[in-house]
Image (cartoon, rainbow, N blue to C red; front, side, top):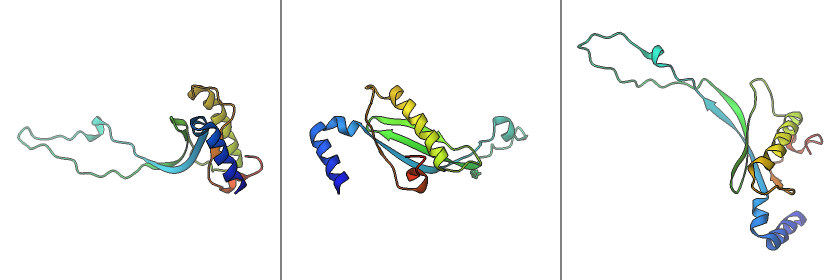
Length: 130
């Protein structure tokens, strides 16, 4: 409750500047596929034969974990986890370091104070991460 009242008081004092200082984070699995090239899809046909319509559904080639940070104006950072890696406190620390560097490049005003909003998953609340 104390944090809630502090944030509410800060919003009342700063209004839009406070809203611009909030950066949200979310992670999601992103599926991708590798479409076949023109050369791979070529078929020999008779001159008089009708052209085929493709109804083939391509299964996803794989999936990767994407972490997105955004604020009121748009996306600040999109980080993709490399295959074989896991989201742990060391990875979160590396991602937050990238975020810190990216904030000054993306935002018009050089932010000195940001409020990071994310869930309380173990890697996010670990001592190394905080």
